[in-house]
Amino acid sequence: MSLKEKTMIVQLNTSHWTARKFDKKVTEEIDETHEAHQAGRFNKTLIISDLLKDVQTCVSKARAYHYKVKIKWDDAGQRLLPIELYFEYTKKMEEFRNEHKNLVTIFLREYPDLREKAKERLNTLFNEADYPDAETLTHKFNISYKLTPVSDSEDLRIKLSKDEMKQIKNNIQNSLSEKINNAKNNIISKAETSVKAMYERLKDNEATFRDSLVGNIVSLKEIIPSMNFDNDQNLASLEKLLNKLNVKPDKLRKDVELRERTAKKAKKILIKIHKMYYGETESIVEEIKPEKKKKKNKKKIKRIKK
Image (cartoon, rainbow, N blue to C red):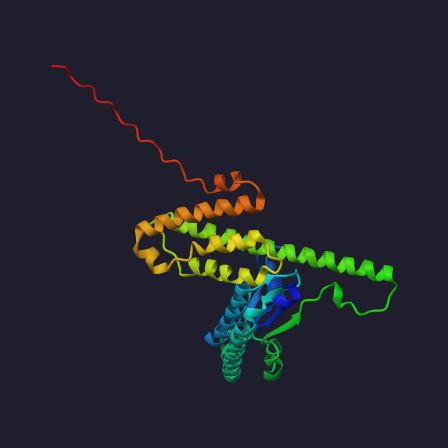
């Protein structure tokens, strides 16, 4: 199957009213008072409310989910979504959108009172012009996403000479190949980061860790088959390696021997990933080399001959 048959491009767009405003006048007054020049920028906190924090938290959760299950496609924020995850992704994003809409509605309901409280709190710093009306403010909050198919050189539908068409198709194909390689490199980078994090945490029996230490590896393992559109054997091998680290977090916390074995396994896999994709192991081995324990100076006790 081709890339366009196994994936879609998804772009997430979010916006949020920060309730902060730069005050040029106060900034200049601070400089004058302290006989300074461009010492900083004074930003007023227009609204203090847990309701607004809840809205921001919802946006953060949506963005975290989006970046967790998708692979980077370009620098414009577009990411690859495997077809198998389409329904899961859209369902989850709609849940975030509904939660966000409800939270914004609650905040806007309290907005007039919160603005009145700001008058007392800010005193002479209060400026009515800093506060948008409710209708304008509504449009400052947003969670939306756009799904589009992946295009390739065969999707070209313009009338040009054969030579011109050939050149344009070659350019499109080269660009597509570059993006595919970047997507693969993104998977490799995520795998290396996740496995290294596991090794670093598990090698210390006293270190605490979250379930996401294992969850990040499992999520990546599950997404690889959908992203392996050209049957890359290295990606297939990477999936098998990551599967070896699929251990219940609670078991790792309770079983010290299992924790130590998994840490050693993570170290070996990290070295294999490096060798598989970079052709060398020296740099990663040096990076994760355990610190040498200082030898204790033991004084020799001479035996007294009787």
